[in-house]
Length: 293
Length: 250
Image (cartoon, rainbow over all chains, first blue to last red; front, side, top):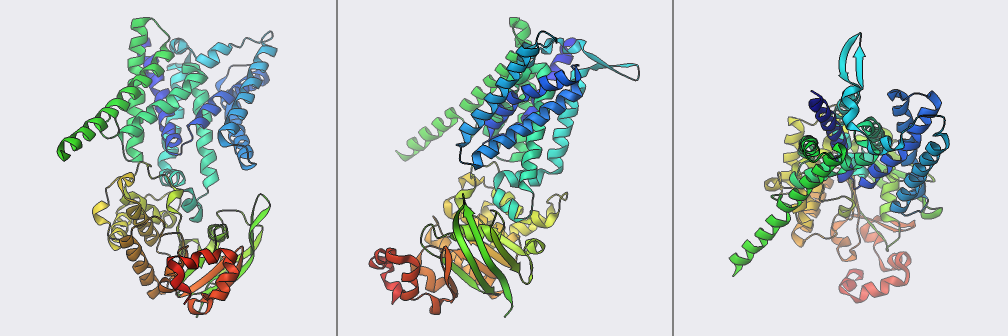
């Protein structure tokens, strides 16, 4: 049963990250995902320091606030003339550093495991269970990440046309009266929430992998945005299942193996994708050369 | 004739440097208007300012006597082709359907009616056969036609087009101008940012000469004369009149 719970948590993390990752990929903003996943650290620490518990709700709020602050600061710097990638680099490393300093300052008083936040420990999630009305309801992580996944899917489905147009042609969206900035911040809030909801299982650093890799794989396999989202979920789930089994076989880090599997799937797609793959492009080119001669 | 668009005292600046300065003009309904001027004259900026895509410092915009916000649905916009990512995972039909999003409200999803409308618009630009084609596989001219079809799907009364003839083949240019003239015949107003001086007289019945300020606006035969062009382009026009567009000033 524990196997099942771990794979379920992994699959839910991968899916909720992937659907958001698709929008980061098509908007060419994957670095923002990287930035947010790092800069939520001070939010988590602050929430922990203020409330004194490792309760999920304050942490989610703290992290979401820091995620939005990150996006806001990046935009502020960009609009005042700092290069876009430099702005991202400055903001997230500064906030991440603040988080590390905070952890080291208060590490005496409180039991806060930095390594846990950074790398996660999905293997323990089955034992951290939840009871609803006296009934054992399964691992807490399943509920938190599951709720996150449903929220992401629900909002993206509800406002799919807005998210799509804002990504493809923000100028037309704005001319039509669609609040471009609102949807930008909505997406960023979802990314912050998802990152924090997932940090228990894969850690805040490996979340980046799940945000970007399955979506990048799906980008190579589909030529419609809706199809890309479905494929990214499939790839995400596949990565966590194969990752879990390879971790058990090798007796290695589960979260590491899950993201590693995602990377291998990306590599295979990069080589063999029917339209964009290196091998198929090579074959096509050779075929047309043969036909010419 | 009714006034389709009225702009009063519009000033737009990037980083405190004014790009469009105290521009005021009126455009009567049912005209095809070319906006011309040297590079950096603020042609695109003017359009973006009118559409509130970039913040303005001052200025009042009225569309058919009402505020811009209340008239959004009757405005069509064709951004520069390079402003979007043509590797975006979508097909031609889907892009044209985006033209209907402004009419759908917050929650309604595009459905059969929107698909039919989009196919009709694709037909008008001669692109029905490419409806399911991934947009990255289209040529520059075809992509521009898709953008035009999307604007048609907006079913607007006033259209703003930013350099629709850039990087398109001769056949597409002809097809586009044909469509714009048809729109004009139907009483629509079309404003086009344009840079090829040799076609101004042939394409537009009104012309706006812009160089940060509106130098002149009016019927092309009254405005498009050497004196005013010299004023708008300054010394740079001399180079132009030596080349193929030398004919244009006669």
